[in-house]
Length: 263
Image (cartoon, rainbow, N blue to C red; front, side, top):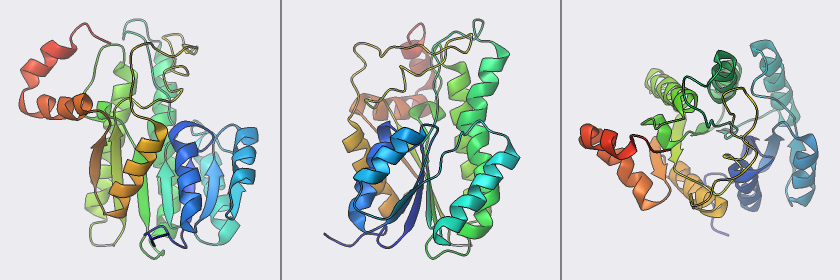
């Protein structure tokens, strides 16, 4: 296999138990990497680890934990191979409820998982990464980091915050040779919608008809490609979602009419 930037690197995939994270771990295992697999479901992570043909370790964590708990997880991760070169922030939760229906506690939960978890882990791991050879942070954001749609007020807020945070961090670290790649997917065929929170904090519990979306295999392929070529930001997904980002940027009034009353 052709040598890649991931060759001989220790990759920490946070959100590896399903969906895009699971596929990323599987693809990275074909590139002569060492993997640290994290997420809430230890059983799924263990099953994944046993299926891979590279050295991999399981480190369960919950992105909604407090800063001190996540800092402890970072120390544990650093101790596994005494090296971490690439961090993939994949884990997250979505939302399916209007703003007026959404409890403040649900907003806070989504922000904890989608935003604060990445901030806390980055705060602890950054000094370690800055000592690595060719360190990379890969953030799986969303096209909703660029625009909001109905019934996603908390989700879009968390993704806007995540994009802004890593844009600012990239600017601060510009001369310190660390790559930060933000990936903004449209719909991907995962359980994100099924696990999305309703206004009261309960899970929606089902997938949505007619949403389509790209496969996790295609998403992983695109993520690894744009990371390997050093992109700071890339939108992946169907043509309509790529177009939506451009329409929002250049024709905001028209975009508002397109998304109004739609979910």
